[in-house]
Length: 54
Image (tube, rainbow, N blue to C red):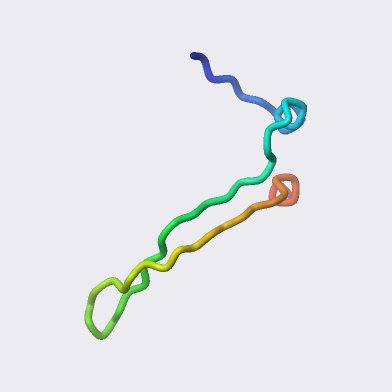
């Protein structure tokens, strides 16, 4: 299957979502114990792609 680059206009025309959401762990460093602390779940939500382009 070939991959094709699509512009934002074409993407919207196909009815595909224009936002992204990333769920990932974030590890903080414990300076006293010299170890990583337990991970904290971080959710990043970019609702508007056009805003981020500017």
